[in-house]
Image (cartoon, rainbow, N blue to C red; front, side):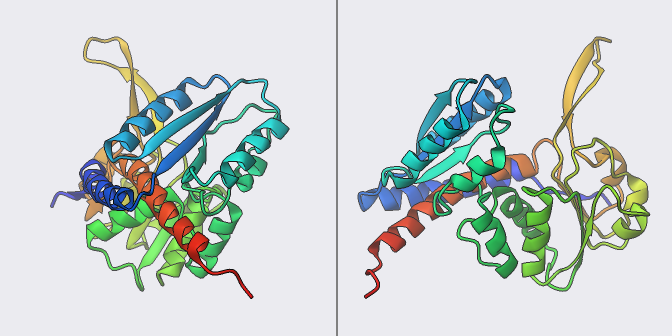
Length: 299
């Protein structure tokens, strides 16, 4: 039996339609939704991503602004820029494009973003609150993974879940997200011994390593759900015999798909859903900011 292909592109379209309706509702109450992105230095990939974010934002009615800072920007100036956006009630969401120039400490900049405007969910307040299952704004990638799992039909509660890759922004938040949903979670990383024995025991396998083909047919068994978070650019040979580049995941899709119950493709899986979740988080941020500002002051 062929695996169910978890089409993140189609699911993202549904979520964007929902976001557009929510934005229209807020706008009818006089609320402007404005997302501000910051790019520091000359990063072509970051600018392409920013252009994509602008298109997606404008389609759903979210205003998008890009602050373009030079490579020479100091840590102090970047933090001052973030502080200014934090106190600006006209700004709904803030996101910071990585990588930053080497003289800037990325974590300090990310941590400076107001948790209520942290639409990527990377502030330690939001990451930490995942421990309790109650982040102010949840990390976009973890939300995207959760949506794909939900669409697969797998019941997370009580399931054996294995997360391969434990980065601060992706793997660890996903691990905590699954724990908050009462899955039994095994966290694997580069020092894990006998990876196959762990992955084959999973009902749900999530891979976020950044290494093409790290998961093959020997790592899976029938009935599993596999979510591939990896995005890797590899060089191959095109039909004309010339070198070509293509995007692949961490999972050997051709080898794994015939075995498992459901799998997310790369591209077209987690990636487009993550952008859709960013838009949804921007609306969620607006709602929560409105609530906190309308709450009466403590006596």
